[in-house]
Amino acid sequence: MRRLLVIGLTLTAACVLALLGVRSGAQGSSTARFDVIFDDARGLVGGQLVKIAGAKAGTIENVVVTPDFKARVEASVDSRFMPFHQDATCTIRPEGLIAENYVDCDPGTPNSRPLQSSGGRPPTVPVANTTEPVSLLDLFNIFNLPTRQRFTAIVNELGIGTAGRGQDFNQILRRANPALALARQVIAILNRQRSQLGTIIDATGTIAAEAAGHTTSVQNFLTRAASVSSLTAAHRTNLSLAIARLPGLLAAAEPSLRQLDTVARGGTPLVAQLHAAVPSLTRVQNDLGPFVAAANPALSQLGVSLRKAIPTIRVTTPLVTTVRRYAASSLPGTQLFARLASNLQRHGFVENFFGVIYYVAAGLARFDSTSHMLAILLVGAQNGLCGSYATAPVAGCSAHFGSAPAYQPASLKTARTGRSRNASGRVSRPVPQATPAPSAA
Image 1 (cartoon, rainbow, N blue to C red):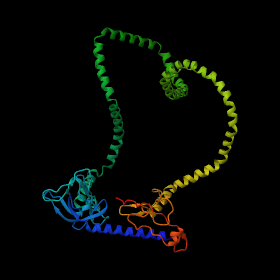
Image 2: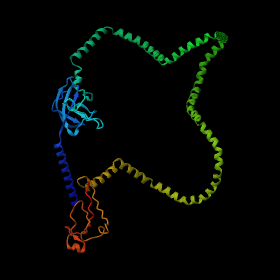
Image 3: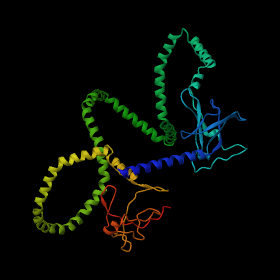
Image 4: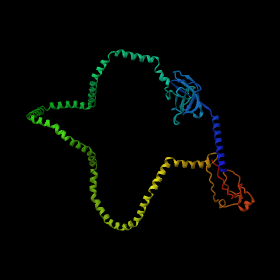
């Protein structure tokens, strides 16, 4: 209980000192000036806020108009947020839907060059690095009087031009819609086949040039084509009968063709894999003979190895049976532990457990001018003196940090017996003091 009280008082004193340090640092901080150029001030006036990364950093001093009719916002912020860099950005943000605006800035990355003062002006964020929001007022301005009147005039003129012609418009749309759809399809097909059409036209010129140099061959081709046409005309009855029977044949063959197509589609990847595996299969076949020749001695010795291993297998069979039974009997407990571990992990047990260790260590740690440290007393034997029991102070042995008074024996009784009674009446032994530790840097 007394140790907890001491720890609480120590933490309270540390918090008070930290707050005093922060407050004194805030009171001693200074301000720095910078300017921002916007296309429009958006209602910004002096006294409004300047925020950096969402935190209040300063105020707007004044808003003036530049020679090129831009808005120059003169502001000042805490010097801790300076300097602003070349890639610094600023934007005007509203506090709410109808509240006043403020300037929110990002000082930029430390790797870029800082902004410099020029022309008697402080560091200035250029208009290229600034943005402005679109407010509800901007949306409402779309429907102001001139815009509304123009839109009304357009609608009125369109209504006058189409008044009483509704039936004509319907007929035009009905007639034009199929034609336009078909024309669109034709144009799309021609567009997709544009390269093929160009190739055909080029090939036609080549064919005509080649045919002009082979007139006799072309004439023979035409003569043979006439003979084929005459023969086909002589058998037109049989051809007509075959063509008449062709739909029935196709209908009967359609299921088989579909199955064949399915087999072909499914077998194509297999054939491709077999084709890719042919070199490997060839190598395996070529290596199979030497492998068999090399494996024959090992196979002949395998029987000897098995005869020697059978007794060991028989001896280990009961152990394997016991392990199998244990695995079967421990399966419910293992599953229960798995659910427990998963539940603990899902609820952050590991993180919270280490958090408790961390905060307990932090609560027990001491605080010096530099940081916290966990006090651990290590009593070592220095020349055989500090590690043994002593009833009087030993020179060079101290457990105090820094320059602390040496240990003093409580009474002569302590010097005689090595024991003393504390305020609660319990007997305690004096602790030999370790060597003083060097102060923290």
